[in-house]
Image (cartoon, rainbow, N blue to C red; front, side):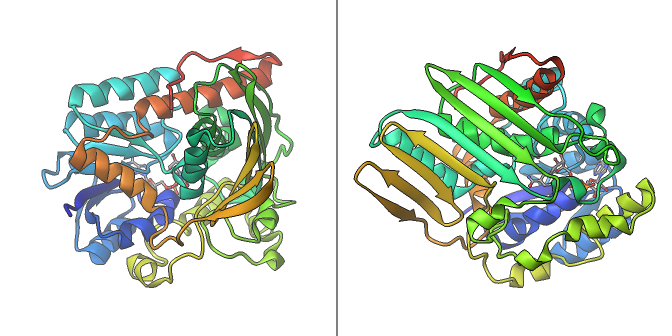
Length: 394
Ligand SMILES: NC(=O)c1ccc[n+]([C@@H]2O[C@H](COP(=O)([O-])OP(=O)(O)OC[C@H]3O[C@@H](n4cnc5c(N)ncnc54)[C@H](O)[C@@H]3O)[C@@H](O)[C@H]2O)c1
């Protein structure tokens, strides 16, 4: 099996969340990185015996790479994708792909001109239980899909942030950072382009200054719709409905209630908060050895409670399979436990690079999600339904 010689642009929190995948999946060779933080670069060199670069442009020019994983802050995605595409490197760029439709279109054009595959993710629409639910829906066994219901309550707003992550105008808040997951799961299950969105989202906590919650109705036409409810204010937690399996597929302790808010109370300035976030990034804490030696997660990643309602059954993806509630009984469709968390991302990236298999999560897919997030905000601001124009067929 050929290995993807991967370069990483941005060794922060997103990279830490992908590290268990990248350090364990034998289809990946960690070949190089770029990050302005010297301690992160030094750690990368030590962990992987890999090359380090002090700019993303230099990383992209590295001749020993097949692909670049772009996990820098949102505002750099467009420039970093352009640099990678111009250097002929395939790209996996974190969600949200872009902060404007124009930037998303420019990234798709750059990928086309560079002759490379552009993948957007990780998002939770890569998670195996949602992909399995999609397969069941597409089999037609339970009739047409009519409704998707997604509900997620987390402590998102109280995790430590950089200042721009608390400013909606700069891509901050739950709509740019969290809605992409829920939107993509709904789009995946709906299986056809969304037509319009009506949403509400306001700032509840002035001290945080950005939206931590939203409600949205996505209309796919012909009687198919999705309702997306997200609340990141750190009170009720929907993991209670998932037998206390958390977003990353690991077991959680319900007694840890309120820890995100409590940690933030000790912080007295935006600089201190950014420093607290940086302590959760790659560099001085745990690294590749811990990721390699950790036991496999008990279950798959997930993004809260999701129910796909077909004419003759409700399907509920869980962290370990899909519950099917049909006319004549209910049953559980189990998935084999994951060996490597988020291996589904590498499945798609590997197939695109080495078999030229068109990825599901391509640029057009990512742009459709970015447009929905932008229109969610517009609908919340204007109080009107907003028509969508850049929706790819999943
Ligand atoms: N899919 C997921 O589960 C997930 C989770 C967290 C974040 N993300 C996404 O990942 C991206 C990064 O977010 P984060 O929370 O990791 O932020 P972060 O601040 O923790 O990390 C950003 C990293 O990028 C580095 N960086 C800053 N400027 C750079 C530049 N010009 N070139 C190269 N590196 C640069 C920083 O030093 C830092 O190491 C965002 O787009 C976010 O939405 C995705």
